[in-house]
Image (tube, rainbow, N blue to C red):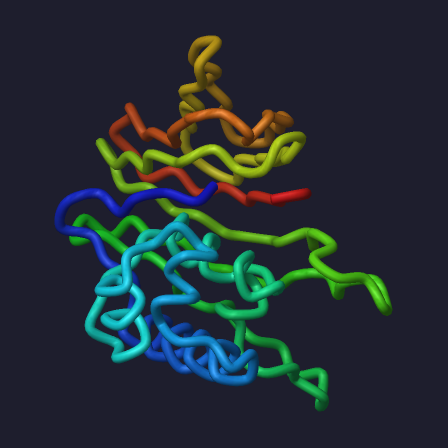
Length: 198
């Protein structure tokens, strides 16, 4: 699910500042210039500079590309530092739109000890306002998502067609394809999303 933000939507400023700081720190730890990270990630030098300075509104796909180039993952850049006290948190607001649609990253599994670039499972809570849509870019080959609708009706638009889920329904979709989340109804849709292998 790494998507370009739709017009008028944005990542939160706290999220943008956090990922910018972490990308800069990891890049410097490697002894890389911004140009070297640009070449490794396939992103432009200007985009990476703007991200590091907190001036960019990067898509989730852009953050994911930078993370992979730095041998880490999206969750490691996006989530707050580990909570050693075990306090409950409401999640990290990663994306929001003017209509009230939003995506909260609630948590992620830990990478296996000693594993490098091992994909982690991520747990998300999404809300889409009536008429809201989020267009996603393909994840790594073999990546999957589990969706469970809490309220409303969610339309998953994939290359093979649309699937509509109502409250209490779940499905698994391959996320290594272009796809979108849509709310074609008159009420907000709230759904949980688990990403595996992204």
